[in-house]
Amino acid sequence: MSRKPFIAGNWKMNLTRAESVALAQGVVNGLGGVSSGVELAICPPFVYLDAVAAVVKGSQVGLGAQNLYFEGNGAFTGEVSAAMLTDIGCRYVIIGHSERRALLGETDSVVFKKTRAALAAGLTPIVCVGETLEQREQGKTSEVVRSQFLGSLGELTAEEAARVVLAYEPVWAIGTGKVATPQQAEEVHADLRQLITSHFGQAIADGMRIQYGGSVKPDNAKELLGQPNIDGALVGGASLKAESFLGIAAAAV
Ligand code: 13P
Image (cartoon, rainbow, N blue to C red):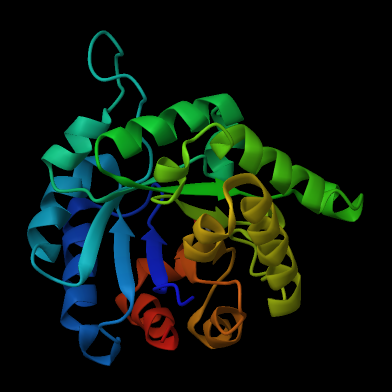
């Protein structure tokens, strides 16, 4: 079964409003070299979503947020709901990024609740899993990512799971320039695909996109994206320049 390649840019906590608008415009203007068969999203900080929404509207580039809160509304100071995100034009939301897991105390059960809330609002969640260097060196990669997957997504219904995008982001490869080799990444993606098959069944496993994230650049994208179980990329640093984000998108067929 063929899965539509999906390249998403996670801008993290970077850029000004003017820079965000200019970057989004640069991406939209440069889509000529990108196949229409590639799904694209950019995920700016919350406060610039509205400004970027106006730029990408009607283009191949979808809008995503980097987080949300699982409650619908109410006394949750500082939080942003799924309905607020759809209201300003978001189609995607990144959930459970390793930076949020490590620095902001996000647990698998919080990731599960956020994923449910995103799905209920009609958003496509991009749910992140990945091991630290220490865990990899201890030979625990499979155990860790399997446990994160089951804790974060295991209780979803099959209908819900069918709408999830998974992102495998080894923590040691994020922002370090140390990209996983295509073989290292493929091994984990294949393992996750097997887990999805045993947990949700063949059809869900065949359909679920699994992005790789961690130091993806235009010059390593082609080989990573060429692996049978790598269906896209979640791009940090290289998504902050239109040229490099578009270079990665162009490598996806
Ligand atoms: P880098 O591409 O900067 O390594 O970041 C990856 C990432 O964390 C995307 O979510």
